[in-house]
Length: 388
Ligand SMILES: Cc1ncc(COP(=O)(O)O)c(C=O)c1O
Image 1 (cartoon, rainbow, N blue to C red):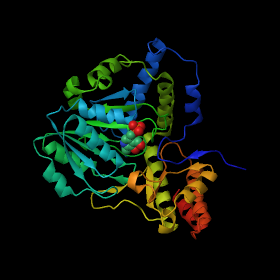
Image 2: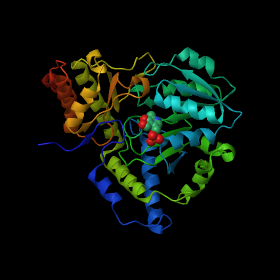
Image 3: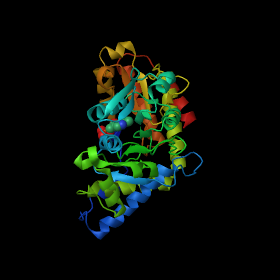
Image 4: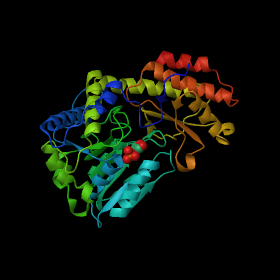
C-alpha cells in the first residue's frame, strides 16, 4: 500500500485537515463585517506567535504590531527595506545563502547596498561585520535561518552591532517563526518577516511582518513600491482590512493554522521542533550524511530544517536518490543553484508527528540503499526514536 503523500521539503509544508477545510468554505467579501472579525483573529494569532516565541513564555515585545501582507515573504523582505531606506541610504545586507543573497539584491535595486558575504553554508566572520556596519549604516538586513543551507545565523550579536551604530535591523525569520525562539527586543530587531507556508503551517501566498514602535514611527513610503506601501498597510490593518483585495480563503486558513499553534502552545511547539530537528540530525549522521553548515562560535544548526552533504557517489547523479524518495510518496529537497546536486534538505516545520519524522528518516535510508549506499536504517531509526 502506498502511504499518503508527505511533504518534508522545507516549505510549503503539509496543512492540517482543519486548515485545508477552511479554504473550501463559501467565500465572503473582503469588505464584509464577517471578514473584519476574521482579520482581528488573524492579527491576534500573529501577535501571539511573534511576541511569545520565547522558551520561557515571556513576551519579547510589548509595543509593536503584526502587519499581514497579501504577498509572500519576499514582499515582506522588500517592503521592510524600501519603507525604511531610500536610494541614498546605506543598507548592509548579510549573504551566506539564497535568501541572504535576496536581501542583497533587494537592497541593491533600491538603496546603497554594502554586502557582507560568506560562502553559502559558511558562518559569518564577526570581525568583518563589526568593520562593515558603521554609523553611516541606515539598515542592517539578515536572515535568521537560511533555509537554503540550514544554518542559524547570529541575530542577537548582529543586532547589538546594528543598535550600537544606530541602524534599523530587519530580520528574515521565515523558516524560524512558528518553530523556534525569536526574541524581538532582546535581539534588537525592528522588523521581522514571517511566511505562511513555513513553520506556521498555513497555505502559501501570504506573509506577515512584525514591526516595533521604532520601525512603525519610521516607515516612509516615498521610495516603496505602490503595493508595498507599509504606512497604508498599517492604517488599514488597524481597521481590520487590507489596502487592496484580501486573499480571503488563505487568510481564513491562516487563522485556523494560528489557532492550531495556540492549542499546541508556542513553547511546546518550539520544544517539539528542536527535538525533531535533533532526531533528524543524529539519524542522518548515523547514516553517514554529515551536516552541511560550517559552524563557528556564533552560528548554529537550524531547528526547523536539516541540511546534509550527499555522498560523492550520489552527488554525481542525485536524480536516482530523489526519484527513489519520490517513489515512496515523500517530498524532500536538494539544493539551490550551485548546491543543487550536493546537498539534501529535510524539513520538520509545521505540525509533523513523530511518525512522519520517522518516515522521513526511513525514506532517506531506503532511497540511499536503492542507490547502493550501505546504511543501517534500523539503527538510525532507533537513535531518532530515543530522541523523539
Ligand atoms: C528564509 C527564507 N526567506 C525568504 C523566503 C521567500 O519566501 P517566498 O518565496 O514565499 O517569498 C524563503 C522561501 O523559501 C525562505 O526560506
